[in-house]
Image 1 (cartoon, rainbow, N blue to C red):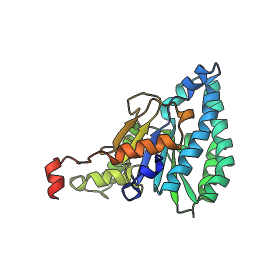
Image 2: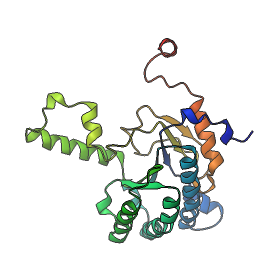
Image 3: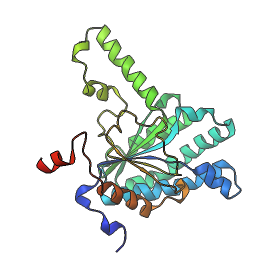
Image 4: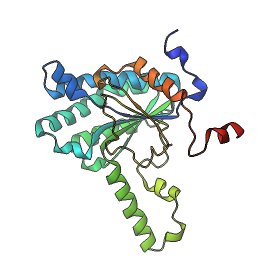
Length: 248
């Protein structure tokens, strides 16, 4: 029995988030420069996106570039941005064929103009696709996002639009860049690292976390299936006890 057939399609996570880690180490293992790893990571993006759409996952969010990544060597950052532009342009056909809508979260206006333009064009071209939504987290960090949400809510409270006493968790969720996107139920990180790295900190409060030693350029459909099977074998209690879930 192959891995895909072991998945219960009625219990799929509606939203999967992925920290795509290990490109640099993968390249180093092969005696290549880091950007070689990023280039080969594009194949993993394509495979995982198509596999998620085929299964029936509604949302797939990929952590593509964090606000902290600007601190990397300028040569790598420039190469990453060039790769981003080229990849979006090349993958539009794949997105259209699979009826996948492209969205993005993060401080997008601070991206290089060419990358920002290509991103907006991709979002516009795929806006009517309804099979799955692919969300790219670009120039993103959870602390930046939460800080911006606090500023937005504080401004609304100061102007009298919002009563501070009426601020709820939902108020904060609506002020985040992910407003309208369901919280991830499964968060995957590749490369063997076991940390969150400032990714969707508010949204993954109750997500199941899955860490794999596989480096991102080597991540394929079967690796995604393994993560989903692991998710489906877990008991999700949301603060309750196992007995409460049985009684419910």
